[in-house]
Amino acid sequence: MRPLLSILLAALMACATPSSLGTEKGGLVPLRLDEEALSSAYTPRRMALLVGISEFDDPHWRGLRYPSKDAKDLAAAMLDPTKGRFDQVRVLTRPEETTRAAILAALRQLRKEAHRPDDVVVVYFSAHGTLARDATGELRRFLVTRDASYRAIAQTALSMDALKAEFDALSSRRRLLVLASCHSGNGKSLLPKELEKELSGIKSGFYARPLEESSRASMVFAACDWGETAREDEGLQNDIYTHFLVEGLGGGADRNADGAVTATEAHDYARRRTFAFTEGRQRPSAEILEVGADPVVLSGSISRTGRPELFSYNPRLDGFTLKVDGEPRTELPGGAAVVPGKRTVELTKGDAVLVRREVEVGDGERLPLEQLLSEAFPRRSLSLLGGMFTFADARSRGELLPMAPEVAVSLRLEDRPLRDFGLLFDVSFSTGRRSLRLLPEDTVPFRYTTFSAGVALPYLWRWERLTLFAGPRVATLYLGRSFDVETYAAGQSFFTVSPGVVGGVVLRVGERLELVGQAQLMLTYVVLDGKGQAVGFTGGWAGVGYRF
Image 1 (cartoon, rainbow, N blue to C red):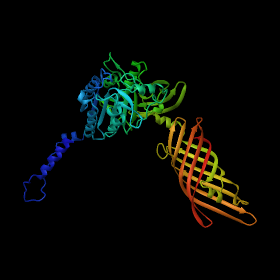
Image 2: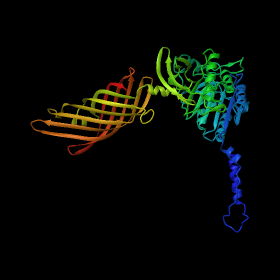
Image 3: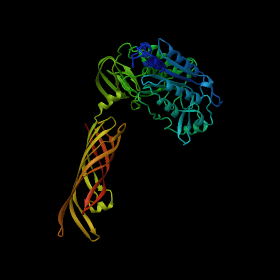
Image 4: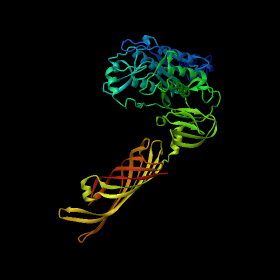
């Protein structure tokens, strides 16, 4: 902002200078702007904050050999005019720079400086990682700062929650967080003995990847997967993942040959080489939410249109193999560049084929594989259901209609009108005979007919073959009754429009077939014997659906 402020200040001073035509009010003053300075003021910047913590005040934390060197080596690659060409790289390695307070202050300063949405911002940590319980007893992840106390981790170390909050507060939409640490108790990690003992008895859960919220167009790279060990290597004299990340910035990671190494390309390059170097014991991971093209260029510049890329960093596809024209290209998460034209794309795991599609891709195109997945599975379903209809309160069941069976047909459209939402249309029908008990010894038989039509906009939660949905619903209800007894022969009908909610579950049992359960609770208003009353009615259905 300083160049721009200087220009505006100069302009104001020029306007305040007395005009040579002093007798004229509002005389125009020539103003010359420095176009180069003005352009510089609006040019996106490339900024990085790199932290390497090797030594610790508390002797319980064993010293690390290479975090300072990791940060400095990465800084050298970023500042290299033939590679990263970053405008500003701040490296924190000295004892006074690597306390919790100093790191948070540096992050907040970075937030002030990187204030443009199109600034490229990289935050990197090479340090110990650990786990501890917070004040509420929840297990949390922490980065061990120089002044972190082994006996008071939650109070003195840098929590991942605090780091993520500072990272998410950056204005940039092109931001990358790299964590060269782990939380497994081995390698670049250390756990309190009582916690290590507790976790040793857990067969799962601890080793399940935690769900981290990723902000729009942000990326979080980790040197290993959750529960694994991040390693340093004496031969490489670096953190293993960091070594290959720096190596990839030299140009070897440019898989689509467009002249630039993007963050995802650099990570995939480092991930594959780290996996091979450690013989599969360390698997770098990524959490990515990007819109369109990868927005973070770490090295070089895009000088030509690159080859088409197929990629996925969605945890749902972890472990699947991407095959192109029958040839294995990469294991997901990751990506691969392909030859333009029509390609046969497969996602496989072992002998099972998740999806096989023929796609046409052109130069410069980036195709997320989740898109093929969503296109491969039908997003419409027609279900035949059976269940019960009833009023929610005992009075209405006694005066209007007792519980009654009904049949229904439901049409569900997924990802309409928005992704992860659905449109749900249903109609239900019931008819039969019931009786009202007016007195203990007196009942009145009647014939009834109900008809209901509803539309809902539920949100969809999907895991593998299971889908849960819930949301608002609006429905019409028709209830007709006819009495034919000696003392009374008449008919009644009620028609209402009612708001309410719907919820349900869907389990796919085949490529097209699914089991469906649905329930709704509605509120309506009826007039009975001249008196209006608010009543609730509900229904529960189950049946079989067909996806098409």
